[in-house]
Each structure stands twice: as C-alpha cells, then as structure tokens.
Image 1 (cartoon, helix red, strand yellow):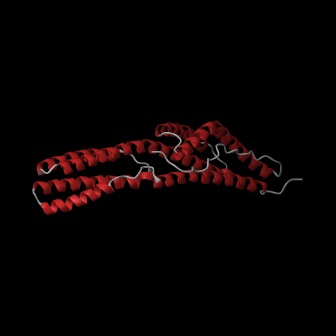
Image 2 (spheres, rainbow, N blue to C red):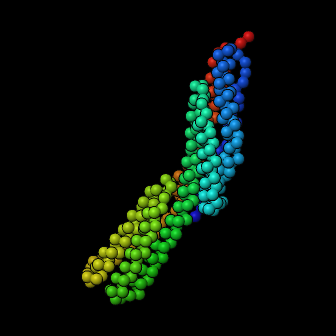
Image 3 (cartoon, rainbow, N blue to C red):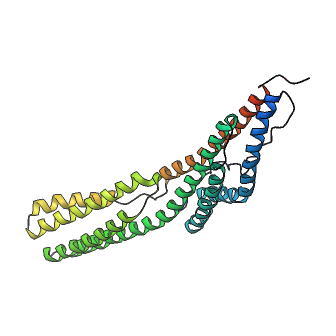
Length: 279
C-alpha cells in the first residue's frame, strides 16, 4: 500500500550559511571572526552532506506520493539515517561561540528531525507490507471458517472448524505483536491486535457453546462473532490517518528548516548592530 495525495514541500538541501564578514569596531570584528570560523565549519559539513539530503528528501516525498515501493523507501531511508546522522554528528561536534549558539541549536534540531523522519520512513516501509500479509491471513481464515460453518450441520465438525480458526488467528496475532509499528501507526496496530484477540476469544466461547449444545448461547455468540469478523476487516494500513500524520512530519521538516534560516538572519542582524561602524 502506498500513500496517495499531495506530498509536503521539499525541504531545502543546503543551508547556504553565508560568512558574516565586514569591518567595524574591534569587538564586533572579534565576534564576526568567531562566528565566521564556526559557520565555516558548518558549511564544510553541510556542503559534504548536500547530495545525501537531496536523496533523502526525494525519498520522503516520493514515498508520500506513492511513487516508489516500500522496498525502495526502506533502502533510501536506511541510507538517510546513516548519512544525515553523520552530518548531525559533524555539526554537533563543533564548538559554537555564544553568538551562534541559537543557530547551532536550531541546526542540530533540524538534523535530528531529519534522522527521526528517516527512521520513521524505514520502519513504516518495513511494517506496512508485513502487517498487510497478516491481514490477508486473517481474512482468509474468516472466509474459510464462514464456508465451513455454513456448510456443516454437525456441531463436532463446526467445533473442529473453530479450532482451526483459533489456531490461524493465534498465529497471525503472534506475528502482528512481533512487528514494530512506527509511531504514526501505533494506535491502529494496538486496535488491530485487540480485535484479533477478541475474535479468538469469541471463537473459543462459540466452540464451547457448540460442544455443550447450548442453542441460545450459540445463536448469541454467532451473531457477536460475525459482527466482530466484519469489524476486524482492517483499513488500508497507511491510509488517511497514517498519511496525514506522515505528511505532517514532512511539514515539520520544512518548519525546522525555516527556524534555522530565521536564526541565521537573527545572528547576522545582532552582529551588525553590536557596535557602531568605525570611521
């Protein structure tokens, strides 16, 4: 299942942190020199990481648009975690002067968010096809049980059919619980696991009622069981809710990038106003 719909805007892949050079009073000059040295180090790191940022952004947006497969998204995200993580470590290792601390913090936050989104993409691309395979198994088990219950009048045979259903659902539930859902699908994952557990409990109760030949209880449980089976048809994983949350995360990248640029402008303004210009 691929995401459909418009993607969030592409985040800029290079920060273009301009060196703050100029002339003026000695204290302002010293501040400029400190900031220039720091920003030069930032530029070296970011310039080297620019191709990786471009590829990461292309992966995020293409996956949101449904233009690449889960496997391609997982590969691109894995590379982004490594390469952008290296850039973040490189920037984090720099020692910003006090004047550039806000800019440094915004940039590290922006890089951290890129790594987080890459990891989220990687987990999402691994989780969605796996959980859809589980859903297919459950749907198949439901169909087979319905056919066997409708085609059998013997309570013993129906009990055997319910035994098989419990085993199939139990196996699917174990696989589901072993998966690692990304944050955007955590609530949906928990609901689906509870639905499967409830289906298995109802199947067990229905089997007991059949063996005990309790017709009233069988009728009541069969109605509940069929309602549960209908409710247990999972929505398309990575559907509207997950898509909205994932694209919101991409929008967060744009906001974080804007915050970096605003910190850059504020730094330039503060240095230009630090002291009156010399003669």
